[in-house]
Length: 105
Image 1: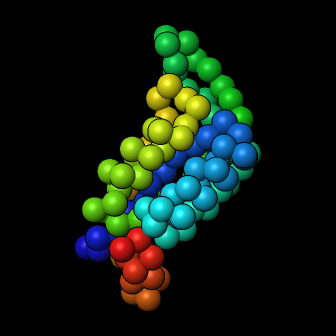
Image 2: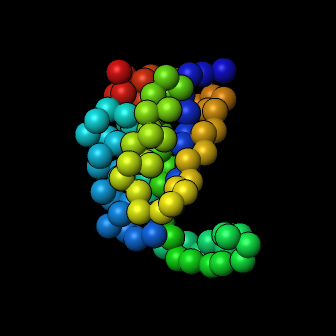
């Protein structure tokens, strides 16, 4: 098992997604952020089923920096409750995983 994490989030616009991605990489909280979209999201919010066009952020970091990634997303995000889900990276290219770790430390 590796120390690297994938943090998943969404944003309501490409500009917002890009702003968050740049801030995370510049602060060395993330090695890389992929922005995918637009995507269609369907969710329950305040008792109603809603849908929206969003942009998906795949944020590569390490376990020790993941809480700071989540905190920074909350600071920068326009949503009342921004998504920030951590997924453990169980394996992969050793060189790539080392690059993630080196990029955020």
